[in-house]
Image (cartoon, rainbow over all chains, first blue to last red; front, side, top):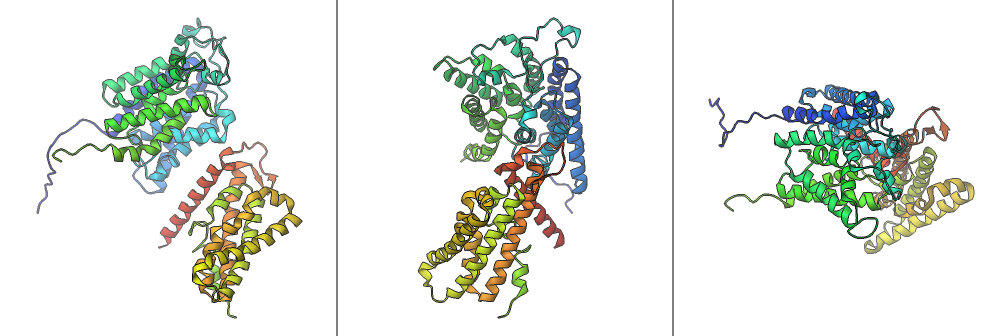
Amino acid sequence: MNKLTVSYSPHLHTNQSCAKIMWSVFASLLPAGIAAIFIFGAAALWVILLGVISALVTEGLLQYFNKKKITLSDGSAALTGLLLSYNLPANSPWWLVVIGSFFSVFIGKQIFGGLGQNIFNPALVGRVFLMTCWPKYMTNFMKPLDAGINFFKSFNYDAVTAATPLMMAKEGKAVIDISYWDLFLGKHGGCLGEVCILALLAGALFLLLKKYISWHIPIIYIATVGVFSWIFGSKGLFSGDFLFSILSGGLILGAFFMATDYVTSPLTRKGQAIFAAGCGILTVVIRLWGGYPEGVSYAILMMNAATPIIDRYTKNRIFGR
Amino acid sequence: MKFDSKEFIKGLIKENPTFVLALGLCPTLAVSTALTNGLGMGIAATFVLIGSNIFISLIKNIVPDKIRIPCYIVVIATFVTITELFMKAYSPALNRALGIYVPLIVVNCIVLGRAEAYASKSSVSNSIMDALGMGLGFTLALLLISGIREILGLGTFFGYKIIKSYEPMFIFALPSGALLVIGLLMGFLNLLKNKKT
């Protein structure tokens, strides 16, 4: 009888969809990829392409064999593959990228039931898996090209070895002769997507202006890392180089593009603030006292695990109660 | 004495101690790094299981209910001591590889669990069959897990290298890899079970 179902008000229509947001995030990450190709050469391009394609193939095959609807067009698998490839060195062997992508999509996402069901950020699951399996390949960073494209020829790359600035800091080298400007432009060793802060910030600005991400998680995360790095400096309290710790490593990539993942971060503003501060503290703890030079991926994963608890205690008050 | 083969079969798959009852996961995680370790642990636990099941089933009527657990532990500890001394004498390398996990069979929840849940209520013959099935099920599970972990994590099979240019996946040599393998195998077995029904 009643063919027309009317839900409760408000009846709002928004021109927004999951696929649109996913592809926007994908597009906002592209500048960093192009910068990586300029810095590391064609090797970076192959890693990125391989990461995206193998993530798409994995997702498609798993959904086909599970007899589920194949949802490659929503962009989530492509985004996972892209983020994973940004977390790898540019000179990774091909099988490293393929296994990482497969693990990200299979164990990180599909095994929990697909998009929206995963507890952990799939790309970071893949990265940590590769980091535990083959630390040799994951920490062997390529030196930026000496003379790649004419535009970058004027820069002098000789000062930087293949180690990342954070690795040098961890080894206790007193003077790290990289200027903040070099760190900002990405003229140093590192994972291919994390080095060029300028390109990452351009993409992040696009997402912020489009309101796809709110400023809460990234800004609080970065500020916490800055403050704690400044307090616990190597030369005594309140002497740390906070600009160095913000600009080096994967902090900008992680804070803007991975900690803000809708599925694995808290829902309320208050929860997001707690989440971001937790990420920041854990990052600094791992960087300063942990076994690894970089802790962004582990920090975000640990706070992903805490997200359900944070959500439970930061529920918004229902009006009228 | 009548031996019931149903009591034996159930321990292999339907009530597999590792994958279905989720008992004895601690030694499983710790010793399943290589096939020889898994096999040694499985045999040791099976021996203890058979011995303790027989004796607990024999003394079930004379043990007061309130102090039954200490009595069971004493019986189990006796057999674990026998196993440990035997292993030390005849296979010191295996004993070193298994380390603390041999004496810890005393508190292995499969052994105590079968004593409490089965042997203290059943006849001696059924207890023997139950112990054999459970022990074999535990050994098979250990062999499966340690086989996957050894091949992926070390690139070897019973200590022999399989593929020369293989880059071992280090995570499978660590406890985190063991959790991963056990979880995936459990999920896979549940998938098969759900498909059947």
